[in-house]
Image (tube, rainbow over all chains, first blue to last red; front, side):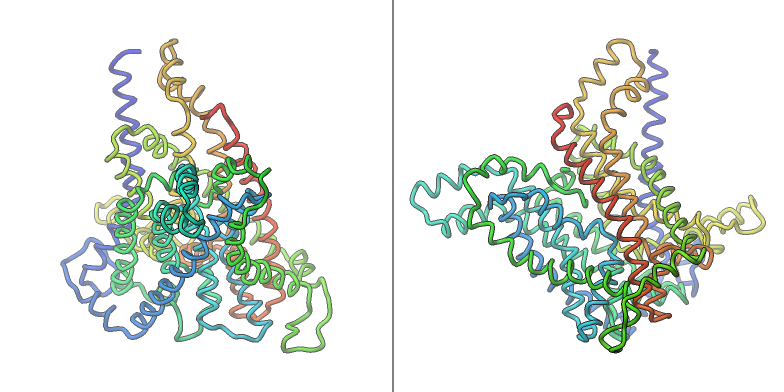
Length: 267
Length: 302
């Protein structure tokens, strides 16, 4: 093989990958452009820079009420799924349960089962039991899809750590409770925290389950955005979208610092 | 992302002979949550799909298969099922084509910083809301969007191209939304293939391309399969994107399901449509877990 052909192959490889990266990231950059463009409707190319859409977004009562609800729900989901998910991960990795593999697959299944069905099913069971559509129903629905993330990151950490550390502590006379709080918990903490961060953003952006479980005037931010977009596409939507984009970017940076995103790729 | 960490559990099966540890009880709260808010609701959905009405408000409901008969008896519904599967399949194929090169690059990236940067570039869009990403594609593909105004401004076209309110726009946005799942699944598998195998093929005279096609590609087959099943399962359950990008020209099963609940108030028929989608998904999930189980037990890759 000649050196020139090899170079042509290299160039093609990096050009292709550059194009794919552009495809992934450019749409997010374009939203930022529209959030700052002063024209009343989405139009291209941009004609200037303004903050009026951010003002409109933060002054709009519907947007603010839903943003607040989304943040509150996400915070509750974070706490609930972190506690349940971390406990469950410990049980699956250390409990010597027969069929732990199948149980793990079961706990991971809300990620692959259509979320719209989880929403429909929850809606139907709440309807049948006459409970209505309370906020805790929304929190439970989101927790179902958040637990797998905590489980995944915590299991990844548990798989990597040496159980002899725990054995050493207990052979030195530490009680099981003390071993847990002084050895196991500090070691799995990064995985649990990373899972909690995922849980928060997954709940904040969750749409299909929320669609079925929210009440009029009690919608989460993604549902309000969706309803708004059915009729109107203006800069306020772009400004609201920036909230989600900025949050995603901060979460990615935070996760990289806490646990290293690499742990996430592990199959 | 949804991949199940079966291999994480495997080492502990060796300890099983020591009996179940009391630690296993820690799974109880999560199990309770899943039974009450996951298993039970899906059971309720299946029951409602076989009832003539809502037993909570109507005491005279009877068992019936009429919702399923309605599904089978009207071409509208089989067409919706078919277009759901078709959109899912095309999305999967393009996600694979777009995702593979990036996954390969990421798996072979030597620089730690480069690797972290690529991961961030893949995960940041994934963690941005689906509604937001669909909005981004609307601003790009609509008649007055980025592509059409640019092309008209350059004098290349006179009328806007029909990029949106059809299957094309739906699929473009769906590929963008689900390609990170493909990349993350593939990177894990490609990263586990011993690079020296490809090197050996090249030392024996194979071109870079041939070494890839005959060595790396076949070894990454399980990843291709797992990633494709995952993307397909996610794409057939999409609601927002087909609704906003497809307009009135696209009708998928998830859209029909929500329509039945929100405008027709027919929870029984919605349940029957849900059961149909559930059955399709369950087949995919079982296949996916099989692939993963085989993958984690496959020593040739590690």
